[in-house]
Length: 287
Image (cartoon, rainbow, N blue to C red):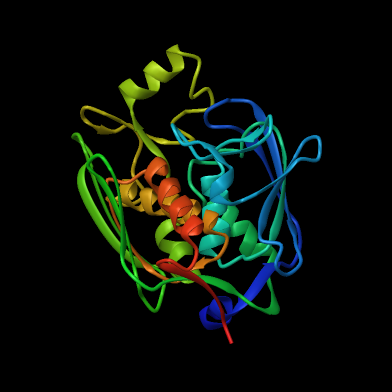
């Protein structure tokens, strides 16, 4: 794996294709994904059945209720955030993501399987300058009591605070996001929900792929299966945020302070930042 400095300075892609099969967390339907190397300046793009291509950009977000969903015309691909998180967290600039099915496979509800596959094939440095989003001023975004602040910084850093009813409660975690810390501190952490929420969704025909193998489920006494780390929920929220920040279409060289944030706020902030261009954010090429 190239060093962090190289990954920040230059564009990268996979050395070879990686494949995943499984069921979608929300639809419960079979899905297959193949992630292929892509040339410089191609970015991260999804190719769906029928040949429709959807760039992983904020302007193509069509839903954020339970996951980040991208769409173009009538074509949709759901729950893209965990795979995008792995690609963004591991420093991949360019990849073509072929999807057969309505949703990215859930795996175990985390991103470790995607990260391990990236490690297995390795990364190619393309020696084209990496596009980076570098804030020139602080920007704050709100959605009710949820807050996301984007700050100038020399590196990609996240400060995440969550506040859920018991037994999860308040959790806080700060991390600098480089491949080494992403691999060990972020990617293994699973999506989570309360038992009553899962039961209600299943009664409505939703969360059909949800199980104790694809998520951490909490009842009133605590998690129904062992946590991987005590603060797994807040770490998973960092995982989600890294995936949604991939929709910038550039490496986020900034500090993010997030309080009780989720997909809706993440995507709203990214859409506004990219729409405003140089007004508060600028795309920079490493030299």
